[in-house]
Image 1 (cartoon, rainbow, N blue to C red):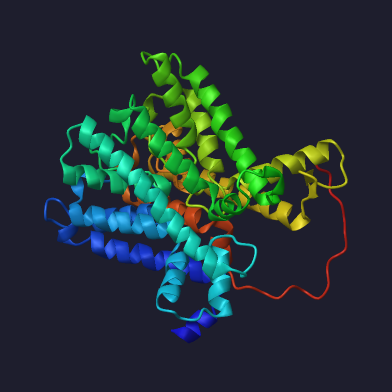
Image 2: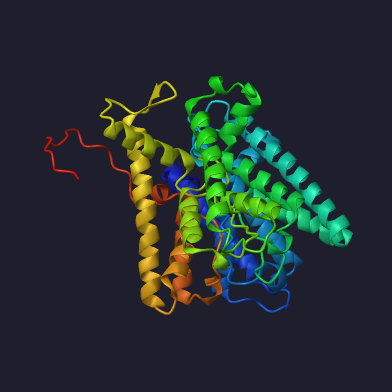
Length: 446
């Protein structure tokens, strides 16, 4: 086994780790013990749920709150936590707890899994990730549990499980809920305590572990932050405020019609935060206007930030693409931001990630539309963008998917979590670069 692992690249090890996690989850969820009825669920539905949980997506063919037993929900929670943090983070903590020495290879794989720039201080970073996660999720769980216990007459046990499950799900940007009837949090749409708590967990989990470290070390001295953190925080802020304003305007007479002004503001911010990439909703997704659907798809496609619990092409990718496009329009010699020049490799990777993710998403839409022409293009495109972005929002067609369509969505969810470029790299043998390069020849663009 060790010999096999030595021959695998870092990306292949990460992809294999997620595949093993999905397999383990499928086996556990396929047992009668995992079902509330005591009867085994279909293997494909178990695989779909396991992939969705391991890849912190949230799309489900079976209602989490009613179909799965306490054991089954516990398995899903376990998959959410491991999938959100990354299995290499958990493995690193085992090295630390059992006082085992981490080799350079283990450190490199850990660095790759959280998008760190190097292996220096990786053990310390792993400790801070796990500790920060536990503290954040505990605080969120306590607030949520106390709220439903005192305000919604939940029993103590049910309130605690509600708090723990949804705190982990929100922080890991997973989108799973145990509220039943595929309702997500629509029953709490007018509750600012629950909604704001969930939004804070989603945003904090989606910023990324590297940004946490930066904030902890340099506090509020923004000028001292590295370029990565500056871009993440700037883009994340813009992607919360601007879409919230747009949702407030375009959904005023649509999905938000009949709500009070305060509830419209709360719903607008939740609609802005959740698609990147938590997947929880307090607004009925199917009732969104066409403009709201398109805006949500854009947010789902962008997602969170590198090294976080969120999916999508990431905030930094969008920032780099926009900055690069602006530099071309302005005919600048290089792409600059915050007094720094972006390297060409960074721009190339951003272009690749954008193109591959968009291609896979559109391919999924095309294939499922051929398999199930009865599904509307609006709902189908939303489903595929949600799967690729590991979001979990749906207009309600997930449980209507046929077996081949489910497999396509499973593939998109897996690629979305591992990373489309990483997944492709894991399948293709790495070759040494050629000793010579081809001569230049230009082509006409635009």
